Image (cartoon, rainbow, N blue to C red; front, side):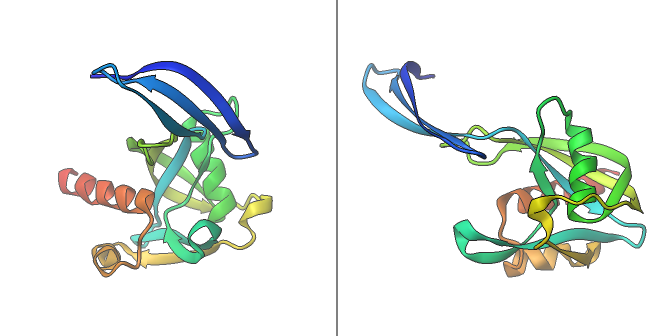
Length: 177
């Protein structure tokens, strides 16, 4: 089952996203429109320090008008590969450089309307190394013992989809290793 794109029109082209409206023909022949947010691929990182703490970041998110507790994440720059983006984002958001990275998987953030794909990594063997970026000054590092992660999820303290997916994938990874 698929849809055939008949036309596509970009209606907004911003710094972080593009918005387009596609006219599609569904498998039964009916035509409809799809509003699509184009967003570049990103990385998300479950980082664990040498004391078995998960490194989370707390930051205000204007879209939901709330401060959220999240795993570090960010965009992949043009010409940058996902592991390099992970290392850069870790330094910018947490002040640590990961000497060991392992890919845990990947997922679409909101495939009903957005093109963004997140590459998920486990980062360990962390050393202090700060990079500064314009948009990270309001980010606060929060270390949480790994054993407390299930309670944070169950209590609703973590409500961000990428963080929930990343932490659940980490917990499954740990069961196998």
